[in-house]
Image (cartoon, one colour):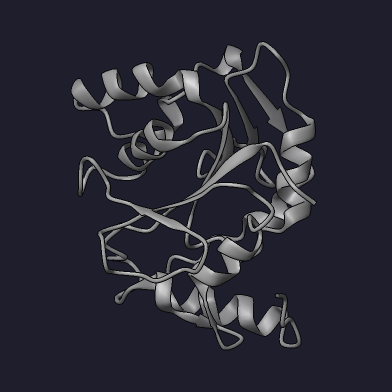
Amino acid sequence: MSWDFTASITAGGRSSRFGSDKALALLHGRPLLHHVAASLQACPARLLIAPPGKYVLDGWTVVPDTRPGEGPLAGLEAALHHAPAQWLAFTGVDLPGLTPGFWAALAQARTSEALAVLPLDEADRPQPLAGLYRRELLPRVSALLDAGERRLRLAVPAEQCVFLGGLSAALRNVNTPEALAAVAAEHPDSQRQ
């Protein structure tokens, strides 16, 4: 399977709630970063938004965050700036439940008018840290950041976004060691590659 969008993972966060670098936290013997990367391996271009030299991920190009410390919206800006394809898959390191099927479902939901496709969680809230974004959003994202905005959910106007339900199982966020332990306990035999 090969996709027509660029993969990107933002891995430059402080992991303050986790207490250590969550990208390197192990789930079933593999770092969280590797679980997320495996879901996007079919992308022809893969960008890791992170400080140079911090992580090694075969087949991924490290792109430095253009505005360190400014959060995921700044990571999206860096990814959109470097994405060679019209569409970009953008996610963080703390969603180990993402799968190729998740990204394929988002890709199938794209429309010619949409600037983004975002999954809905179990409470029907859009989850912008696991979505597809069009490269045309770059000027808007840059303008938001220039104005001091840091909220990723404002990257796309709601009327230009496709929202997709039925994917909440993939959106289990691992922000604390307790959440990681819970995910590991729920899927003790999960050794997904």
